[in-house]
Length: 136
Image 1 (cartoon, one colour):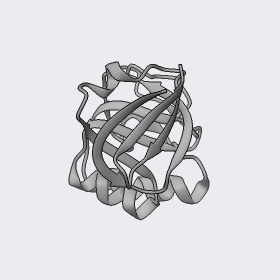
Image 2 (cartoon, rainbow, N blue to C red):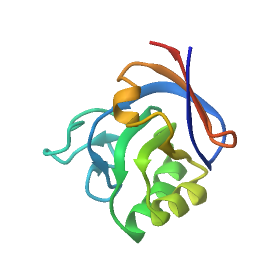
Image 3 (cartoon, rainbow, N blue to C red):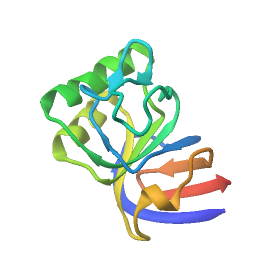
């Protein structure tokens, strides 16, 4: 097990498979929120399903639309298990809180997109500010 420390986050403790990219995240522009996949062709995860995954990305992009879209995605059950960022913005944090979506950022150990690999099984405990790589 590898324990990573981050800023305390939002949402419940969750476990899931990581999906990692050194790219940003906008619920409005990067996702097909009906099919549950990354849809912007220029995104590093284009074509990949985000449903039930722990997304590990560089930064949050976008404004108010991204925030309410997270809530809409949650209401339809087409949402990631969690999102981890190097840096998030306040709007996306508000959206995560509204959707009861687990979200953390600001990792003490460095760039989270290099610390966690796609396929790693991770546990995210936002209240403690801990992310544990359970199985690599």
